[in-house]
Length: 223
Ligand SMILES: [Zn+2]
View (cartoon, rainbow, N blue to C red):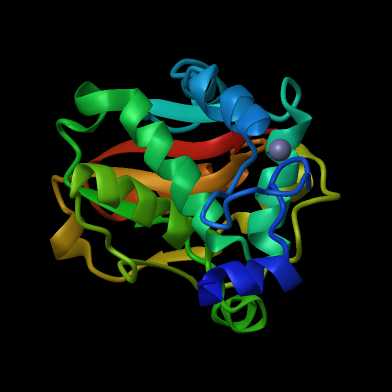
């Protein structure tokens, strides 16, 4: 018996979306959830663009699943953030990238994960947007710029805030650190969930206030 099998026997691994037991510890989702959240779902390439219209200009914007259609997607994101299911985030991002295919990524120069504040990074130990960026890079080989956009303001959780409060919370929260490297480039901003779009709007506004560049957006889910 392999060590891995032994570990699995004593510490069984569960599906990141429905908490059902997983037969193979290398899996992240059970077959039913994988079918629902990945194989049978088509990325949505219109809704986020529509939601950001009149606020910031984006070239393309896509997400994998809607929380309203798939409650289990919400559970999957929760598992990534609060149960440190890091491979699940990478796995979902890889599949989203495959589904979007070459045309979506053709003109993109670099991936910018939405940054966490240093303090939050310390308490959580990782930034889930880095993992999503990693998954996209695995399938596209597009470079990731981890430190060209920083979160300088510590913001409270957005969870219980309304649209206006969310905007006030993130307005002026970000800072661009390397204008030269991003100038005239096509940037792909990456976040885990699109709720009101306030975070991505603030990121893009911060960048485009300083430099001329194109921006596209990817999130794993829409709330
Ligand atoms: Zn499942």
